[in-house]
Length: 574
Image 1: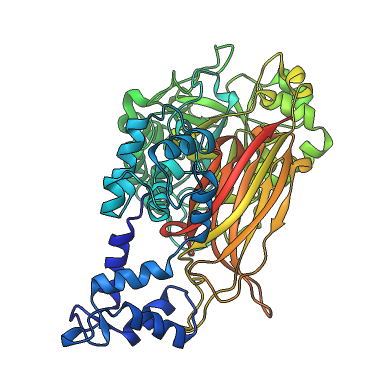
Image 2 (image 1 turned 180 degrees about the vertical axis):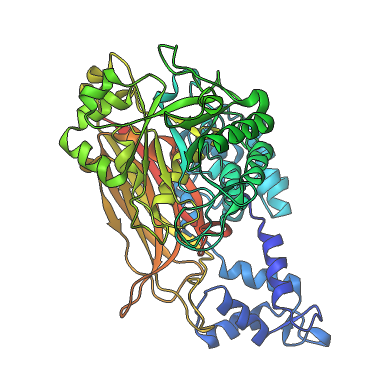
């Protein structure tokens, strides 16, 4: 998202102008600086303020109008790192990019394709704020910053934002965006079962939803049995799924049914499902040699359920529950349309005992992993552990903001946010998998943590005067041999524009299974460091070059349009 400097300054000006007189006195300006996490010596701030007060008389005496404030704020937002980039990369080491300089920068450093000189002229006219520079086709560091806050500086490869993967392979070859107890928006043992949980999941792109169905006094209901969770009507849940199911993505939905009612009620359930979903229901696929592909199943709903159901309901089940005991034995014994459900601890034990066997099994059969029962506060397991074993469906409590959901969001934000992501070749049902593993090359990743801007205070902070001491923690997640951690120095008392300029290298052997996470924290000597913001991305989806990363901040990890981390990343395969 591009942030226009002048528009942002206008918002800040209006916010600080408490008496709405169109001017900012020094104290109003000082309070704004404190709210923006910039700690300055008050006397220095006062001198800068006075230098910006060009009109010394009249109503604006000892106060700044917007134009003066804009000058004052731009002085404070000088970006030495961007100035250095322009000096280093411009042909004559000037303070600006020419049209030719910009073309070379976007093509060679940012590695964007189809960049032409006319296109670069348009970009300068669009992003350069100074009129004189626009006329002479020069891009200043202010213009470069605005450009890098656009798609030209987005860390995600442009082609990975849309559906770029082959969607015509069997379902077993994909990771599936999966949710646990989807009806819950909070604790596992209390609160309300809601349709909001389903709507939120579907809007995020989730494709596997769980329904615990119980008999109610008048109708069937969804709830967490034997707990204090207040139920919600099943008919309301089904209508919500029908209305929102394909609003984000057209690819198939799997409804995992946990049925706790008798045969008579099961017949009623079958009737409800048919009346609500109609032709969207994709029925039994047991006769097929492989499962259909997401492309074949567009706008379809597949029901997963156990055997021994009423005839009316059994005919609607497309995916049959299976009991996984021994992956090597069950590989041939289980039906092609089966899905085994195991807890996180059970699957970890199986993977540790024989990971190749689990990988072989998941290359041909669906497996669902759910959190252990003791996670009553809706915490989550690390999904990467299970993805590395080829497990397609790692069900998370998506209402919880945590590392697990950061990784899960990163996984499914690519490929058009469609809810399905192809597993690496070595985890698919392909004859060449072993050979491909042998041919793996090391990917060397060079990272420079340059600076950050407009970092918010922690959501737990109550002190107006408190200013954060930020540092950046960079971490990889993937195969154990690829796990790396790096931490920058702490920058004291500056959440406004901290600069690090620290570089390091990461070597990855399994880059196609690795994630890179940037996390900014507030250093605290006497207590746990506070979370400020994070961003996580699959390594294979990173566009090389300079990037302004929009951080996900606050309790709910929402993208902050102002808080950014400035980095440089390059790759080399050896």
